[in-house]
Length: 188
Length: 268
Image (tube, rainbow over all chains, first blue to last red; front, side, top):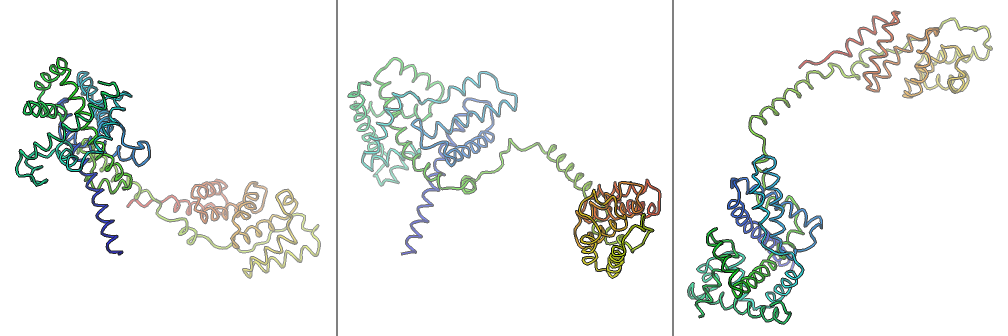
């Protein structure tokens, strides 16, 4: 019994670690890509800034400053920290042209308005209620950024097209469901 | 129709996943402005992708709550960011300055510790009687007590000698000392020193050292210097010895020698 509990505990800890590293790596690539696209800064520095920002995010979670995942996502929160750090970096280096600041400030595409957040709450619920296979295929695609070929292998589909069809039908179902609710709420 | 929908969704995905080139993005955003249906589908897709993200972020958030910073740093392989590191030249200069400061610190440390100096120089003051001012006014009983205390002092029975000084010969507190023979105050102070009451001893010796009128001024200063050495108060010991040198009396040479030893540095 003790042995099995230890296994369970160990494996749960490993899962937690995986969740963090997956999030860290996924957002790292996207942060670096974003910054390099918009600023004259080298990749190594952006990677360092990202690492520091992630530690700040962690500290905010630990200290209770961040009490839960914000409706605008953890990614937005993390990127905001990263943007501030990038601005500070440029300030210290005295090499930030005004245009770069403007471009950085355009970064976030999410909306913090009450209506957007209300809609997002509903979307969270709808996604949470969808069937597991759909959730899995969509997470592999949108979250883990796997290719359709990889998804086909991971989910045991005959071929890439099978995975594509599955992803497409899941997305269509979700979109329709969400559209219905939004229509009832008078948003569309 | 179905294929068109799939293609449209793929384009939306590429836009939302930031996979478009700037040119593609501009074109797509122009289409968004012109096509309300595309705008609606993009908005719904954005909410769905955020929701999928939200689910995974919740799990990572919970995982981070139960982790220490050290564990997190290990997990993400955190190291000192390169851009925060000082250039090599600056780091070298800082290291060189640190080495110089360390050498200076080692080199300028005193050659002798106060304990060593105390052990090397301190000797107990032999009892030496001076003709007591107004001695004729002393009662027979008091004379007897002074004699007893002296004998105990010479036998190195400082605790017992102190008992007589405190209980039979000296009033408590400075105001009363003025009318007492300085000899009693001085040897009581030495007894206190020998029995570990450094504060009491310092009080009496400081009082005696304050006036050149007193017979025991130099002895008081000399012994005060040793109290300060015992207490590892180098500067106070140094100043006391300087006072003694300034008097230019019996202790001047000894004080010069001790001060010289006290001021010696290691110089590696």
